[in-house]
Image (cartoon, helix red, strand yellow):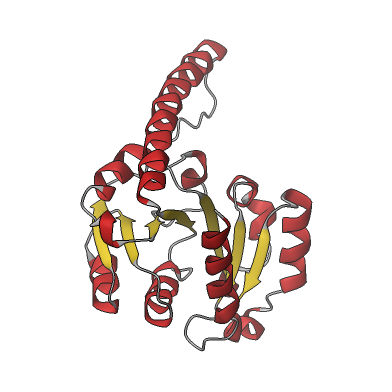
Length: 231
């Protein structure tokens, strides 16, 4: 059994039943804490985004440029197995950040995020990102108390990842295709991704951009502004 997710392989039905019961209790407790986080953020007038992707897909770079190119008052709860590097980058870019190191944990949960929120000056913010641990599996199963889920897919990863990791993309409100300027070097097929997302999750929006070159970045900023005004 996976320590963090409760995934089962080759176990008896009785063991499976016990595992399902334990995981259900864990998720129920997590969901209550997530609702609490969301209510707390709503009281403060803060919009919250859960940012998920594989390691290296460009979450932190996206955030750095969002901070530099927008007027949003941003705070970030950072999740990584080790180091404060991403939080340091966010602070250097001009926003507030609190780093959570999970050790062996493959995702952030609502309880961790609750702790992180209390280390941010929420009274000064109108937008909070949860930069989840780099992983295309586990984070999708845990509500952290955000208002929307955004999943990044970088062109070097390949255009087949939507079909290979459906749980993550099914949970997405927005899919961002990143590193678009180099997609020709990886035979990345944007239309394949769009078609796969549409079949799996017709309600999800899709944006293609490059945080380094700035290509398509205005669409992302426009999306943020629209979502924040809509709530």
